[in-house]
Image (cartoon, rainbow, N blue to C red; front, top):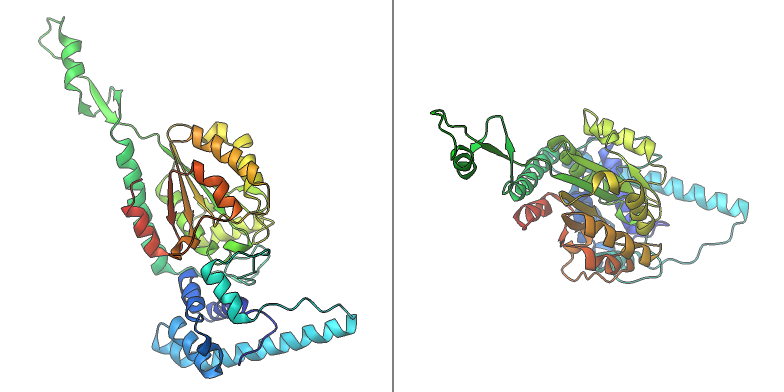
Length: 374
């Protein structure tokens, strides 16, 4: 049986970060798959089975398979040394022993099936993106290209929605037959004055992304999604929030995703901390809605709905956003679980003001967004 002082989900995500430092191209999808595979109790009863399980999920090439055993052994030795050091420090300082945590397998099941609890488990103590982290993030270029391709399709669907309306122009465009005839009814000139129209292109998109602790496992993928949106659609504004709201449109507009991540994490002081959705949305409504909300604005909310603030404030803010925006789309990573229900306070308070609720947690889920009626 495997025994560690940290819970198993924390250790798996930490191990994935360790592998990324050795050129393993791992993203949120691989981390999620590794965690899901550990739902089987038998895997945790054997060190060998545990290692083989991670190896099958995280290795993508012959070179990585060859290196895996050595890196695996090195990682757990370092974890043991760190654990021993912490225990020694605690004994010397005579600190009170922390309350006993549930067994690792129970923590995994609670995470998998979204069981209700008084406390939200810290599922990702170490992640690819950390506000105070110093390790360089290596985005998966293949995944990023796929994200760009699919986000472009999402944008095209939004464009098709707006293309049913036209505005008149003196420049080149589609000839408006009816207006041209009316315009020339009383004219005796031989030259017909043609009226032209073009499709309206003033739709806007606002993305508000939750980067609290409970979303840490998905934050890297969500930033890729937002980065692609900004690069492909000029009229988009981007925000992230945890306990406070941050406007990151300028930061995410850097030449590369890595530079964007560095700029964002420098600006956001409370990355991977608590969640105050209501306060963050209230900040958006009061300080930004007059500039970015209109009947031509599509709102994307990226959050699991976990909240430690006032649910009434969520309802009030969402009502204001819904009233002023063209459409509100909520993307929730926990919806990947078929048994998920919008029972947490944040989601239940927001539900009356959501036009479309969809899962978003990996590249495949963006395909579902493309197929949806936006």
